[in-house]
Length: 210
Image (cartoon, rainbow, N blue to C red; front, side):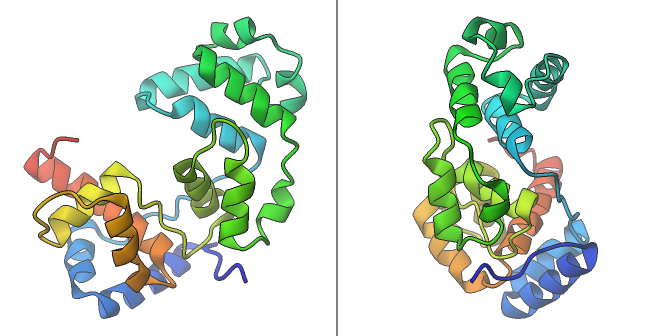
């Protein structure tokens, strides 16, 4: 079973209502942030390549690299396989990321099938490609497919938001946050959106350092 798919803002509202009943501290977060945005995006090769090129870059730098890749038509896997590593590096990719781009283009992922796979199988299919880790796979499932119950527990902003919201003595480890998030099923994807919104609001108020 793949579970609920988030398709509209009404789904986010429903998830927030459920979460605030299940965990009162989410009510505190919601009062500060308001309903978080839908954040759905197009899927497929381009979405995953964009995630790879954006890793460890600022938003501005990632946008610049992506614009150069699109200008070279490297958002198309059929084009990427014809481009040399040096050409991809001219677009701003590091040598490892250029190799990851080639690996992704050659992987022939069945993007349509990902939508109907159980979460564990979809993550395994994605992480089998060099350069795609669990975080990238989970982000893809959350925002490109819209899985309502996927939670990227390794995300630093989510871990920091959880520390603040739940008054934890330190930033929780990925395993600990994943265990805590199990109680937020079947709306873990909405919990993540709410925690990201809370992180941004709290950071602006308190000057949190990453």
